Length: 460
Image 1: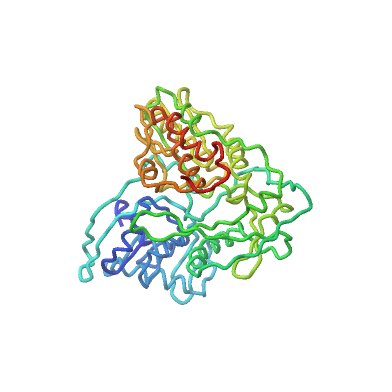
Image 2: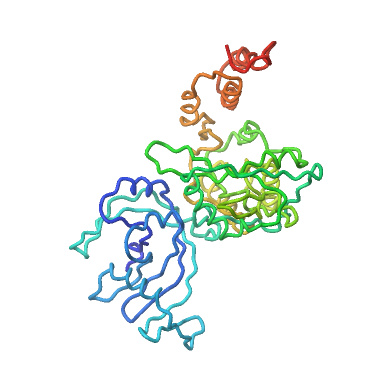
């Protein structure tokens, strides 16, 4: 097969499927985890290990693979069954090459080909009665060739993939007293259990979650359905209610920077930008073995705990922010470039395209070396317009993103103090774009904190 025709059958549907298409186009850039190279006298292909998301999109009775070569009388579609047959063989024997095995019954050969490579999702139509023609419909996006120099270990293989920051000091939790909170798990809807089970299984396999039968601490989990755009498939977030734990520990002083302060650090001469989103960032920070019991939970009636820093813990943003900053200390950028960090988002700002690309690649390679994982699909690579911290950033300055404006406009009229506080919190984030904000905000704030406001919860 010619190099330009190389493809991987990770996403296959037999016939039109609207729901399949919506899920497929959610992530235009993808990553492929190659596993084993198989070959015979006339065929060769590389097997592929699918992520949980990719498994949902592989809807045929075959085996995911990268096609490499075929015989003159073979069809490309024959390689799926070929790889499936190879995967089922059990009579592999050593050869004179210690890296190559041979099947005694078939004469096929195999060798390990472990590789994580970025890929671009494209759409092809294969006609059932025409094996020679592949009709190319569209290429949703492309991956810059410059990214080929970035180690593949950086890119998260799937949405639950986690890294581990090199030489990161394990988190030690300091309790306020001898009290250890123990909260019972409240009933969960089956829909919620089914939604978080793939997340749980992936974290269990990665060692982020481990059995923990003897912890004196227990706190409940409460799966949260992610807010998705209309028509998007349902996803659930694995969330643990750690309020009782947070109240029982001595927390470090928070030091996560203010978004306004960060955005003000963009050099005025910056015209080109890149944004890197670090995947499952908190999970890349280890927790000391003697402190892991603080995050114990029950799932499906069995006790577990986290070995990594988890969301919902009061110190997580501060600890991770410090860990990432320390991890980036040895990185040196070109004069005139700036690196802005806000928890798990990093922005490169540079005066020209060449310098932006050079420094972005420096950052990506450094992150890979330090043990981080980044999202290839969310990478904004060397662009004059990027989205960062709810703002659209360009050489002309920063503006509120349409999505953030729409979110504020769609908020219902607040009827309670809690709702008003939430509303003002969202508006305050945008205060620099709202003329005379403080004068307009004061009467609303008085409804919460003004005289006699403590006597009632509902707003008049």
